[in-house]
Length: 300
Image (cartoon, rainbow, N blue to C red; front, top):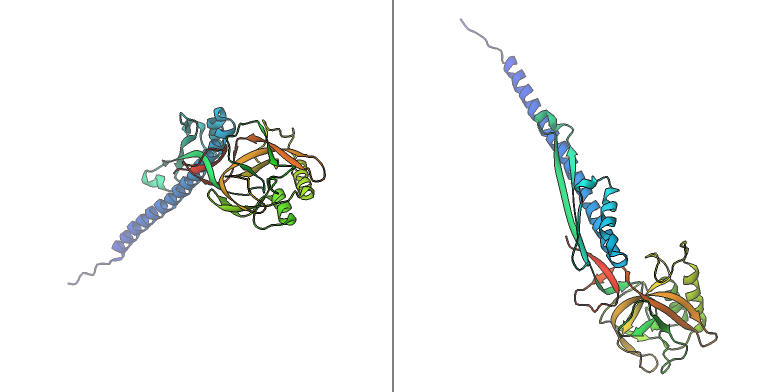
């Protein structure tokens, strides 16, 4: 007698097992993807918050930690999971945060949630390279915050009044650089040319435009200004302006000044500004002399 056994039952069992394994793998892949996305969001939020807090170290160091904490909390992070630490010299801070990520499909396998974390540190350092410098220069010296300095003189030394040539010479280039800042990159150690001649017309028009472009309310002052105020300009520090006519000078640093205005008439246009502490985007260096203009560096 022959007995025929059907394989149909075995196939169903194998099919069910395979389907269960496939569903389990799919659920894990889907939830791992969710975890990765949330991890990346947390990393981006932490990086942004530490940069925001580090910039505040320059303007209001007592509020730097609070600003970093508030910034990341606005990104949906539980405030109780955020830890902010400012270093003793108030030149850097570190932000650490955690976020609980709930799974959608993995609970069928006993995995309900996981915790992702991220941390980052940032420091503020003197800048050694910038974009957007204005075509004014002052000689290398010890600067005092809040003091008024002449950025362009009314009477020149050997034909030089303070302006420098950035990206080309002539009144049109000079005027455009006053309004918009030099589009090229300048670095400490670069050699640049002085721009001889008074050019009182372009000077007055350019400076007056910057003064009028401040739309903040209340109006910015040297001791209370918005970081993006057009009256806060980056000026080149050079080794010397005691040169004859168009001549080569060397960049030793960069500083920020709050434009007070332009005075005088005719060939006696004098531009003055108060020396302020400020933050800009640019290359930074631990060995660069501190002229009060800083950049923020993300450490990790």
